Length: 347
Image: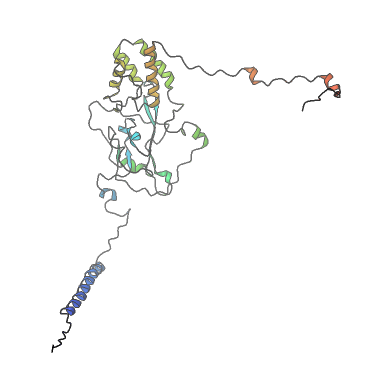
C-alpha cells in the first residue's frame, strides 16, 4: 500500500526579503530628506538677477557663445558679404555712391540688423574680410516693443559711414571691445517704440526700399558716359584704361570678383582677359551699368546715345476742342414730319 506523503509548501527567506525592502525604502527616503533638511541650516542662495550679481551674467558665458550681432563700423569695408550670406535677410545695408573727389566713392547710409528675427547661425560672420561683424555674449532682448530689437549701426542716415580701407597685406584689424557697441544700442525694456514713418518718408529717400537707387545718389548713366569718354581717350594705354575701369567699381577689395582686389579686376577688363561686367557685387546695379557702358563704347568706338528726354505734350492736345456753334436756322426750323417713304429718324 503506497504511503501518501504530503509535503508542506515552504518559502524560505520570504520574511527576510520583506524586511530588506522596507529597510531600503526607509534608507532612500532618509537620504532624500537629508539633502532637503540640510538646506534648513544654510544661507539662501537666491540670485537677484540681473542687477545684484557679483559678476555680470554675460561674463560667465563661454566666449564663443552666439549672442546678439555687432558691427564695428570703423573697420567695415561695405562689401555687403554679410548681407548676401544671411539666409533670412535680417541684415539691410544701403550704400550711396559718390564721385570720389568731393564725396567718398562709397558711403553707408544704413546698416540695420533685426536681432528679433535673427536665427544666430553665424553665416554672416564667416565671409567678413576684417571681422567687423561678430557675435557677442549679449542675450537680454526683453522689450515691450518688437521694433526696438532692430539695431541701427548707422544712427543718422544724414551722416553716412565711410567704409574702411584695409591696408595691403594686413591680417589683423583694430576692433573695439566685443559687446561695447551693442550694449549702447540695446533699448531699455520699457523704451517707447521708434516713430512710425510718415507717408512722405515712405515715398522719399528715407522710406526707399532696400536696394532701390536713391535720387540723392550718383546717376550711374551720366557717370558711365563720363567714364566711357575717358576710356576712349586712353584706349591704347592699358594702365590708364584700368584706372578708368576701377573708378566704376566699389573699391572695397572684397574678392567677390575672383581677383585679389578691384585693381586686378580692372586690369583684367583693360587687357581683354575678362569681359564680364557683373562681378562687382558691392557695386551692384550701378557698377554693372557703368562697366557695360564703358565696354560697349570701347567695342563700338563711340559713346552710346544719351537717353532722350520725354517731350512735353503739345499745347493743342492739352486744350479741350471747341464745340461747334449751334446753327440758328436749325434751332428755329421745326422738325419735319416723315413721309410715306421716309424711314424716320434713327434711334
